[in-house]
Length: 381
Image 1 (cartoon, rainbow, N blue to C red):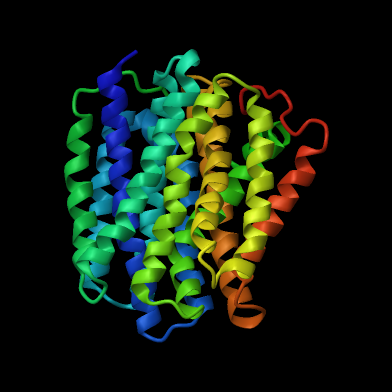
Image 2 (tube, helix red, strand yellow):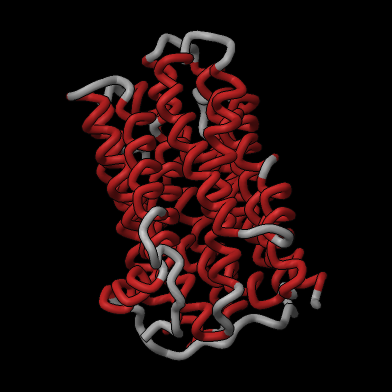
């Protein structure tokens, strides 16, 4: 196994997590200070979802033409430019366009990076090494809000830190090998439907986690502010959720190499349901802090286990295309989640965010009770 390449690809993807973690909450807090409501902030949070869908469609084609490593480097540098423009052009309509561009660019990075990692790892270590990726990515996002709290939200330093990370990280990929090959073809929604019919539980879980992540970085700070907490405490709560995601992924990955991955999957869904329902009840107590940990760990566990199950089934172009479907599902979740939570928070209930997560977890549990939730799949058409 190419360990140096594994850690180089891991580090380049982690730079994206840190860049997003430090810049995206700043976008939401800045909009809140400008007087925008929850729905407008939700629309901003949902814009990258459209970009995700576009990026997923063209990733395989561009990788075949430019090469996986070359395309990843170009996209990382383009992401640096997009985040820099957020600082230079503080305008809601302009930010909508820039968030769309960030969605396209960084989706391609995630598709290729996750495919490259899953291609490299050996089967007996798959659970632990994919979990290390998930845990490290969560830690990079955790470091973002923490760093933003240190830098302050009244200036643009958070944006420029993101720019610096995405300028430097492509250099780590120079001379690396072992990337999956790809064919010059687009990934369509009809292909996605075939994928979803083959692995419906994974499709639902990925969409649910995408909604979770989009809302955690963008709407959770606003949710906490409107529950009466300061901006510093709100960012600390976001960080605590990500801590739960990060700290428990390695134990989940280790268990996935030893026990039934489907049983772990179901357990994460149940814990996510219970923790989501408990948030409105415990938000004003000290118990909210360990609850945030469980909330993040259970949601992150669903995504990590989904990647593990994908990696054990596919290789090369099929793996790239499977991860493109994961990205398409991510786009659906990122689009629906913030819009639904933003609208619900503004017009229905201030606790719409945890209730939406509870509803999604309940739907996943119902799906898991049906036969064929993890049905055998063949290479995507």
